[in-house]
Length: 168
Image 1 (cartoon, helix red, strand yellow):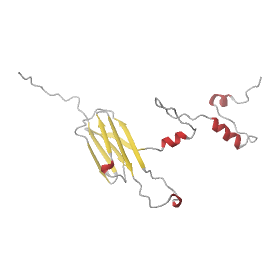
Image 2: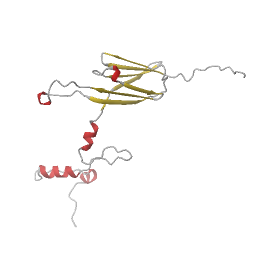
Image 3: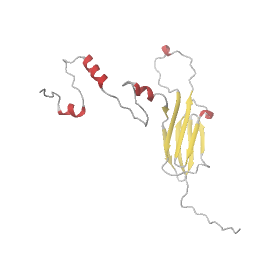
Image 4: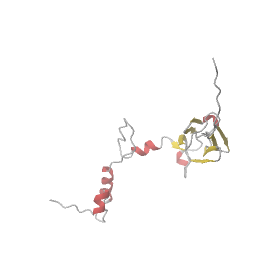
């Protein structure tokens, strides 16, 4: 019977101690055996290779947003520099907003000539769940200097209206 030489912490977390005697090759071999499990959806078979989850993540970018409220509105602000207003698709329901678009890159330089490249090019989207119901019909979106501002008027649930009964 062979006793497990790993510490309690190593057994608990599944980590591996790398001693001077161990080679980098052994560590790389161990890393290949580690199963990477990205989020799965129903019917999704998951990645075929351990590094495949990273490839899936870069297919569509996610916008950064600021969401705040004032007395009458919920306001969403996001940077969409380089995107034409007609290339933006904003879907609104009473409790959710989805912003989609695509930033097209005009290739003037080959990949080999770049020293550093951080700008995101391609499709992006963002869905924001709203903390209150909003009036979809009177919502507005505007863009100025690359800043998209969406104003979503809150529904006043305390407002009351008198209805008159009609006779036929």
